[in-house]
Image 1: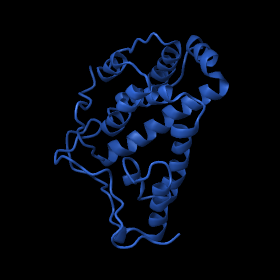
Image 2: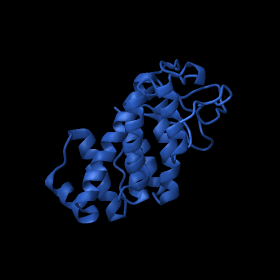
Image 3: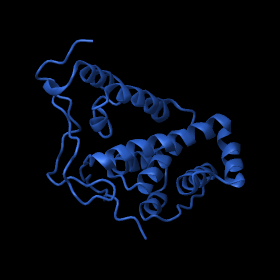
Image 4: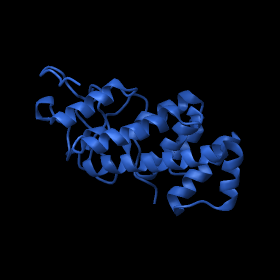
Length: 216
């Protein structure tokens, strides 16, 4: 795979504000592991960036900015995330709702601002997303959403799920769906943690407030 020319830029989505939204519990906007320039990348890093850009994400952004420091890990993580985000058996609406629940749990602004609009577009009700943002239980009339919420919230809170929640998810999603939903939670928690540690910033989006402090 050819190395990028000096003019090729592995940047995030163009920034429209000079006030980045901090990640996680940190109130400091200082980014610890910012985007590398093409000239500063090793051959392995350039190859990993090229592969990411050639895939469905079309850019190096979010968690892949700090993950660039470990290009082999970034490539492997990218493949796992590509499957879970774009190809797994779960309906898009369920995937996006799960991602929002994880983002709220770990107070990750990037994933929240990325996936809350996608969840709304996929059919998740605004009231459900508002409850998630507020740290409240998001009651939903849709049985499959309720099953997903129970599994995801119990898994994040208790590191496992009760028999009733497992049975409800199994009935709706099947064994493969339960496994993939569980893996999706783990994947997004991991990339959120990477960004929280790296303080990878994101930008305010018009009409969508960032997550507030997690309710006590």
